[in-house]
Length: 504
Ligand SMILES: Nc1ncnc2c1ncn2[C@@H]1O[C@H](COP(=O)(O)OP(=O)(O)OP(=O)(O)O)[C@@H](O)[C@H]1O
Image 1 (cartoon, rainbow, N blue to C red):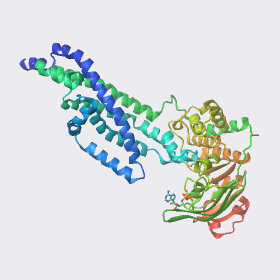
Image 2: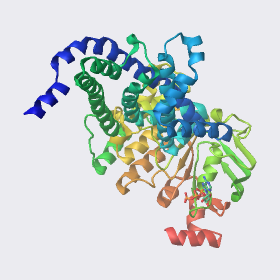
Image 3: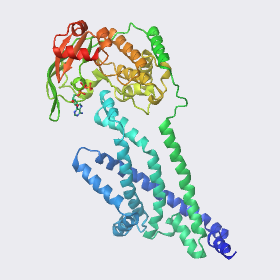
Image 4: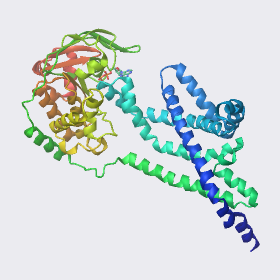
């Protein structure tokens, strides 16, 4: 068995391994971890800057970020390491002394930065647009929305990819040996390689390989665990509730609630409002009066500009012209963030923050925007969740709630800011039929308690039952407005008559 002896001697010379083991740990492992960790940390900083430049609207930021990424991702790692390590050796010596180690870290960081930048960018861009819209509707500025909601969500999504990048850096750190490290600076590979030369067999190198596996294999499993946890959330049990049980859950909350609590609704006045998306004129001179504490339902065919009108009222889109007043104050002259504290919004697709519990969703803008102490914010958030029948589900994340429950959390979240007006944009369109009633009843209750509400809806029954005023829009104009009886029982225009014939 000559070949067996041969292999044994080459790879499994235990003495050679034992001899190198202490140096492998105290020098090799230490330096590999320093190189990998430092280049990951600097890489994350470079990557975050590149990602923000990469999603910027300015080409002056986007193009340099693109160029950087293309260059450092396109070049083989060893070429970059040699170019930086040797090309800047003189400056390196002046700055850091004789050791090439810092230049090695620099080169590894520059390479890692390019990859991490792409990881962050795709993570941030994969966050649903509705998240930013919801943040802005809760009166966060663009920067706050990015910092508090979008970027953390994007980063959390790419955590597994970042750990993978660290694994890559552990492996790439072996390339730094080309720069000629001092004995005390050698990383795992170099320690193994040197000893292999001394002993004349590959056992020390095999030991180096084992060290790499000991670092990387458990990390790969950590990646998988993080990945699974992120997908499922930390929730232990996701209770599936029957839709009918949900309806009674809300009924019970309505009965036990303090119904005397009334809102102080504001008024809205819109004159000659125009708005365009590029060349497309969407609103063509809209007039609308909403009295304090009243419910206005906006109905009309798809594409008639209903949602756009709503978005103009809290300036999620900017009008082209016209006059908009909130309690007599010019909406267009107000700072959007200030306006949105007074005008809340609830969306068709809820746009709850998925990484936060129901309670946190409601609390977030109280603590971050209103700077309320946590205790007080929590008290208010719990009360609002109780109002919408979700006291028992405050610690659930949106993923563990039904559509109807999510929409009620969204309503509680808007209510917590104590707005004067709430805008509802087709909030029941994405719900199962038996859950629609619960949300509509909740909205009717708010209307009854004096909240000013502007509701874009296809629920004609709700409009007839709850609205003080129904507004029919078509092709960017208000065609008819009046009481539910006027609109539904005595339509004047042929267009409204045709629309009602289609939907009723
Ligand atoms: N972000 C956008 N960019 C370009 N065009 C848009 C945008 N949002 C809406 N539009 C267009 O503006 C018009 C009015 O859209 P809007 O969503 O206000 O109508 P809507 O009456 O609410 O319709 P629906 O009932 O289908 O939601 C449509 O033609 C739509 O395609």
